[in-house]
Length: 451
Ligand SMILES: Cc1cc2nc3c(=O)[nH]c(=O)nc-3n(C[C@H](O)[C@H](O)[C@H](O)COP(=O)(O)OP(=O)(O)OC[C@H]3O[C@@H](n4cnc5c(N)ncnc54)[C@H](O)[C@@H]3O)c2cc1C
Image (cartoon, rainbow, N blue to C red):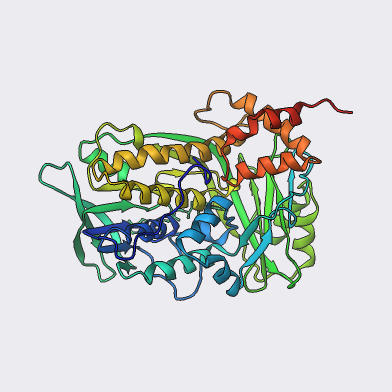
């Protein structure tokens, strides 16, 4: 499922009937989006976060990826606007940058830049801490929501038969253990989620887990940006080179420059090494930016990303009532494709519809079945691209090589075919399903004889 196929958010009527208590563990993007949805249905929603939460948009320890470029795809952008009306305006007011995805983005892939698009696509650019900060402020403003920073989840509480989760045990900053009762608990603790281990310890089967090994790493520098510098550059990796980069303007007169490399070909964390790495990319923009602009600091943030992980909760025959898992805890994708926040946003929409469809029974089963369709799309897109490299290890979806050959040809045709570029970008942005790339109109454009 994509933006086109997940029904949009329906705001509740003026005085919605609310009941019960919900707890969300993890106050990052997936946790906050979940809390936003739960606040429509539950009287109280408590978000447990182990980090202290900064008063300003700053990177924090529990979200180390927050120092690197975070692209918000159209599926996420449109959903953020539905859940937090005026989100883009507020982002821009605080220094974020709104560009046109059709004309302001130089997208290099398969040997050249893609043609410009034909319609305006608003793209929001900011640091990941600013995205999170605005979302957090909006969520905390909701009457039902309480945020409890510096509290660490340690255990789920269960009923006597151990068939339902009835709350959580947490350790507070003062070191006290506190139990919070809840009708629904949501695990949004990210890719290191301990729910699989907890299930095993209670006699449940843990979910089957797919791991696709890409042995990638990111290095990110922060450089200065003149006010008229309003362009994103993306150099995607391809079979010829497992290196790439992404750079765009953000708030506070800065530009983030992220370089990445797969299969142990990692960008270094020193200035000279990073510039040398940039000089090997197929486009000159990254090296030029790093050598001609002032650096905001000499610090280069690094993040290793060894594997994409997908946990198949939808296949479990037994799962405790009163518990859900969302966001990276469900699936964590190769970040090159910028899907995580948008997938979390679509999952929040699914939760909204699952809670309000008038069938309160089997919440977890219905939620996991529907989110499977969202994760399928994102997983297919990122994992197929990962298997362009013969070194990638893990379960390879059937037909991947054929699809990759087709997409490679489609991209090469997109260098000067605006309609093909549009079709591809809509899929990349999780607006339209990948099947749209196989429609007769697109197939004809991909294979039409050359003059
Ligand atoms: C390098 C990199 C670049 C990325 N780039 C993009 C991008 O361009 N676009 C995009 O959409 N996505 C991107 N992502 C993915 C994105 O960061 C995540 O998908 C998104 O943050 C949603 O994650 P989450 O909220 O599920 O988990 P996380 O962001 O990992 O947050 C988990 C939270 O749970 C808290 N927590 C963990 N354990 C406990 C506990 N026991 N008790 C209390 N709290 C706990 C943590 O402190 C943290 O706040 C990128 C990821 C990486 C690694």
